[in-house]
Image (cartoon, one colour):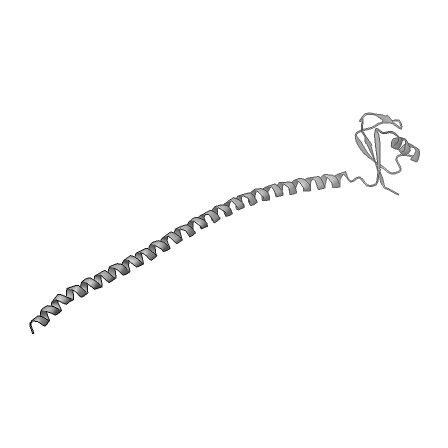
Length: 140
């Protein structure tokens, strides 16, 4: 047997079984006779729910649901911010890769230019040394 009966009245203030009813009321199971409960069930303006009053549990769950929705919204916002930051970092990484490739090309070009200058310097040294050798050879 149930310990509570909840009567839902779809038109609060309506009389049934000699009582004006609120939108919702919870009674002990033995408050109404079986005939009175059947009168409520037969009237489309009423709903009878037998069992414990779960409104406190429902209110607690609704509050927890609201808290969870708020947390989900907060996490969604944080995720969006982190995604934007990640995208920005990827973009910066691509820019850095492009710059590195450009610098590597410039370094390679600078090394080649340095090798050219070195070769030219060696040629100049060799050319400068020839007349001195020829002068020294001519005096003999």
